[in-house]
Length: 420
Image 1: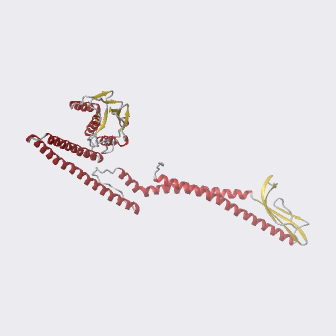
Image 2 (image 1 turned 180 degrees about the horizontal axis):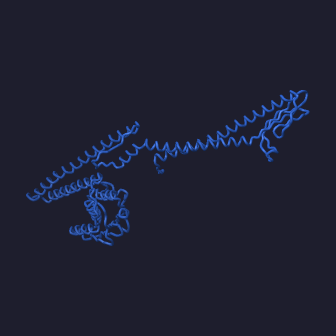
Image 3 (image 1 turned 60 degrees about the vertical axis):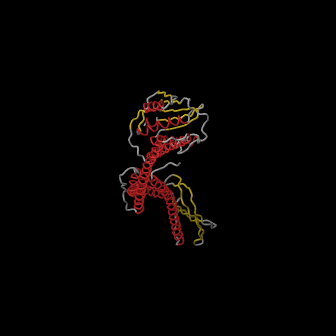
């Protein structure tokens, strides 16, 4: 996944890179364009000077050479015009200098002349470079001003968007507080605000409807189940029934209990999904495990062995803590042989529960999915471990499963939460 950067930073970075590229490109173009103009100006001066010298020769004036700028000498043969750059010695500067040289041949008043005109170009290049540097300085100052002006303006322009984004981050379906979004004079931001308000109102309305429906169904199911149970109890107590009828009635009772349990667990999952467990307490999980194990032992599960190496304290809802431990221990009991030991250990912010298993699970990756059962041999609801996983996700606990030495081992790590 690519690294995420802030919108203003990204747009400013794009502006910065584009501006620097344009500054560099324009400076290079200006340098060559200025150099071309200055070169053309130098050549124009050369031709102008050559024309004045030619005119003076035609008027029989005496022309004196002035090396290295102007040189006039008679030649026997006329040559071709030459325009070039040359480096020659300048006695006035006492050093070698770069000149632009125009050398022409003219036949004037019956004589052949070579007229050579030179103009120093070093100063022209310095002039061009000075112009470019001045341009860069002006461009940089303008760019810095525009950069900060653009950034400030963008922050003002995008301010409603960022404020609304913060509001969306704090949005909660369970909260009754209305969503307070900021309007903007930018059409797209204003439309976005309207759509978000419409969407959140619809989501909140659907959530309340679904929540009410779930609660109503859960509540309404309890009454007919209780009536059916009461009628079955009356049937058993008041009438004589055969062994076959007794088996059938007992089976119905088990199905009723399973349906009650299923209803209760689905309701619990729904409440967890809806973040309805908000009462956080510092729970002594070690004491709670002791109580649960004693309760299970009273139900003839004497093979439970609890080893306390460190006291374990966790911040969570007390009701969920009770369900959490109950489901873990119940799961170990359901999937263990009657006389095999079930070990429960707390140490170093870890809770470990292991029970005997004849073979490893075929699909351990599905272990915490709702209604998943490895086999249909036991009549569990398939929601116990799903609730455990949901509780772990809610509070940031880390749960893992391994099959080690003929044992199913569940480990819950509370260290990350307790450190934070």
